[in-house]
Image (cartoon, rainbow, N blue to C red; front, side, top):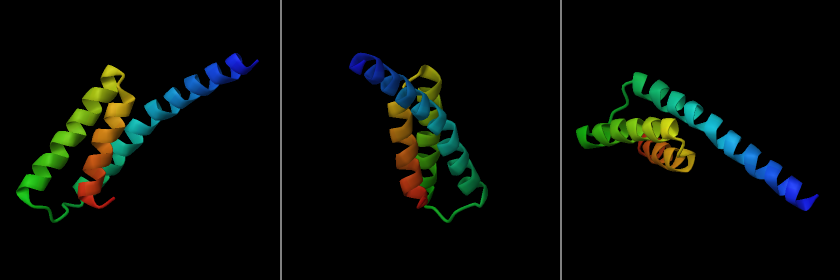
Amino acid sequence: MKKWLLSCALVFSGAAMAHGCPGEMKAIDAKLLTKPALAAADQEKVTALRSDGERLHKAGDHTGSMKALADAKKILGL
């Protein structure tokens, strides 16, 4: 029974992270639409991190994706 519960927890935690990536990307996109006052270097960094997050998400690396997206959100002040 413990193995079954552990298996379920791992499956559902992976699914939750997979669904979190698109939400994070939407939040970043929404903030970028407001034209935040960022230095050019920060703007480039956010754009690169957002792209990396999407690429990693599509590749199945949701942990890496969430890290890149979190870094982008930090720069944006989200």
